[in-house]
Amino acid sequence: MCLFTTQPNGTKRLSAPNQPPDKTEPHELEIAQWLIQNNIKFKWFRKYEGRKSPDIFIGEKSVELKTLLPPDGKFRYLSLEGKLLDASLQSRRAIVDATQTDLIESLAVEVLRKIIDELGSLFDELVILVSTELGKLAVGWHRA
Image (cartoon, rainbow, N blue to C red; front, side):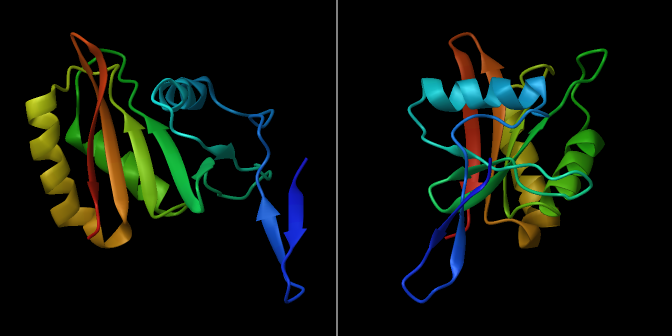
């Protein structure tokens, strides 16, 4: 179900559902679980067949969720770049789960710097999730 609220000026505004849409990918649910564990409130965006749209809203901001799932577990910069180019068609904010790769925190910081240099004009916020001994760690950037 997709809900709308009517603003005082008569315009309709989308209200996102609280439950994930039927066609939600398992990797999106994993990122959602991480958000919940970290007390980050969000709402799902309704998906429409054949239309690119963001996955969630955090507050008023749309966010696209992506995951790197290389068969050999090796991080590849071009794969991240491709996922982010795809994400940029759906939102100016993205969370990329790289926990299924061998990307480590220190390298993630360098990778994020390079991504910002190359694709920063397409985004307002980026987060890369990496695995650590203590669990998932978010390495992020946002436009000042």
